Length: 254
Image (tube, rainbow, N blue to C red; front, side, top):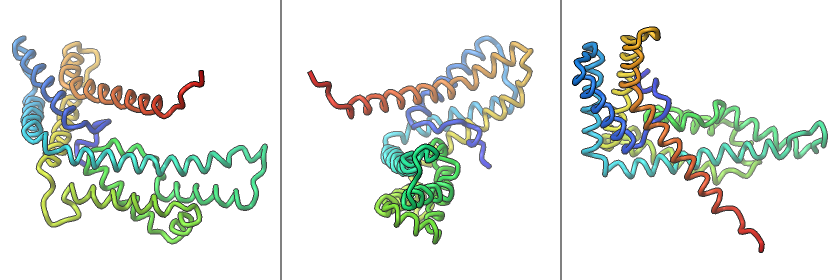
């Protein structure tokens, strides 16, 4: 398992740049106060700074991967929401019993969810390479005989076809389903997350004493750039979602 797995969220290229720039600033501030980092930690910090420069140099070319990732995430999330909607539509059958057809439709949705999205859609926040592994498993599950039959009965074959196409495009851009190498900017973003994951592991290994104020300070200085950038992206995502919801609501009748 790569060290990027220790990060809670994948950042956009701009988020990587923001976090890496802040980390470099914190490192300089510590140096000015004559605070020396442990050799392994300092090496990890320098690796993140170097990876940040690489992302910045190639940032403009990563837009396509960012768009592909967002499109794939949206499609997968919508598919999960459709299954959830079908199951909820036939909920509370203890109050209002289901017909045989209704029970069968709910069972089909539950079957597809258990086989295809058994762990939900939280994997959409993983780094690209790890998300690709989960997407590949998802597509493989769609080929199951029982799942195929259930999807046909549910009338979701068009959505499944689009899921497959997004997954294929995702893999092509990463360079894992074609002979050509991955996009350099995609590689740079993946390497950045791996470097910061390594820093997180090293920082906790070296500075794990909560009773030591210096340890707490160093963990904050080293890890807060990533955590702050992740929170900023979460807030922006929530704001975008709220804005879309507002636009979709009907105008009040005067």
